[in-house]
Image (tube, rainbow, N blue to C red; front, side, top):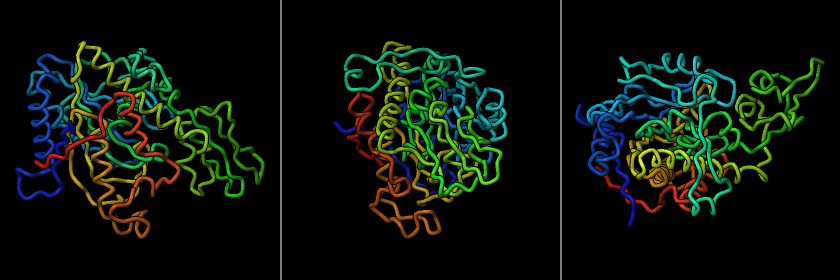
Length: 384
């Protein structure tokens, strides 16, 4: 039976149809569809991406408050959460991460709940979650390392911003769960790719060396020297690729991208299983996706390009695979935004995510997710 995915478009005609009102309507629908997901006295994690400093495409804390209010209305105790990043930046430890969240408006006075960094001060608060035999048989991994704060929560509302991603191609609920619920060691297990320098394109600017968290990317202090990446020291975070203006850094797509995508999806399963195991039953999660500001890259980069399609609205479901497939299909059907990176390169009916990142395997997330029991690609879009 198709999984219902509830949808409200981006149009607003009065106060009752504002963007915040739409999210509240969708959350109320989820409360009807899965009333036992968020319960009285639950410590309810609201999983969100706070955005890297310099980025403004992340979900607004004004939008996010609707999730906190929905949990409070059910007698739960909500908190906003994410895990520290693998790469260097404004969220690589809990102190910097909290300060970034505050700078972006994630304070109780705005978003309605406190912020807790789920994997602790330095990313070492985590536990192993074993996959059930049927999932393990279809997976590359047999378990996932999930942040302690995610596992300890009684329930979770997953707020995802739909956008492109330089390695995953498509970023939605699956990526939000996978990378966002994993500590450093779990992120490294997913990032099974390595990066290399095209010496002909390298302009010796040194930006890659300045952001590399392990010192794998270096630039000798000799005039005319080119950047190099130590393959043994590289942890595959991809930060060097995002800052390389001449696009001299890339990965060996032939050997890494499929494994990365499947491992990432398996980590999403680990986050969901951990939540189910906490209560010994399924269904302790709600998913809401914001299909607005669909930008080419993840909210992890300290900037954002113009959106590639018009704002399309909001989705809600109890299934992470179904909601991602619905978001993917909405963006695919949409026209391209004039002046964006896809202007003149794609149109309605084209896979926008592959057009932006042609070496990635966006839909493999949903296909593999269905294969390992994360959810179903068979959905029914319910327009409210």
